[in-house]
Image 1 (cartoon, helix red, strand yellow):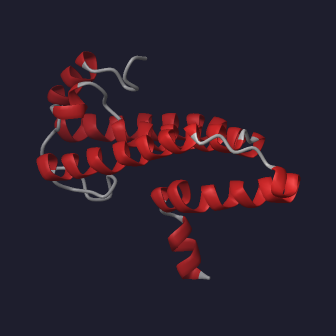
Image 2: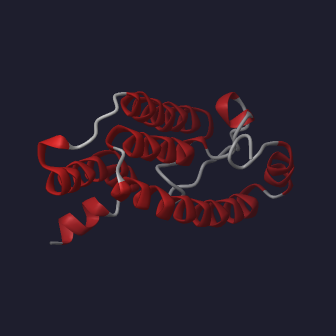
Amino acid sequence: MRSIRRWLSSTPRRTFILYPILVFVIEVFLHGDRFAFNPGGLLLMMWGYGQYKLSGMYRTRKGGGGPGLEKPPTALVDTGIYGWIRNPMYLGHLIFMTGLVVLFSSWAALALLLFHLWWFHRRVLEDEAHMSQIFGPQFDAYAMRVNRWGLF
């Protein structure tokens, strides 16, 4: 039971493995073999996962630390995709979940997405406060220069 709880505590495992399986099962349960399937959702899912993975690798290579802030970075990463958006990994999760909504035209996937919009925003605020403690004025200047969620 402890290993299951530890496995489920991983946000990437939930987003990229558990949620697609869960949404698929719910849609099959609700609609049988006549559930909606829009292949455009797969493109969003690939984009989201790719953005999460590649920006995470870039952050680790340039800033050290990770995964997450349990092992904080040793350098502030403000180049590459991080020069355009402060939280590209979290946004990758949300793009992936948007792909689930589109793929299955699913209310269950939409509920997951809406919950995670709030959840990731709350997590970002905590992470940014932590980064401000670690990097001080350097992070604060970066936060003034680069949007939290890209265009928003």
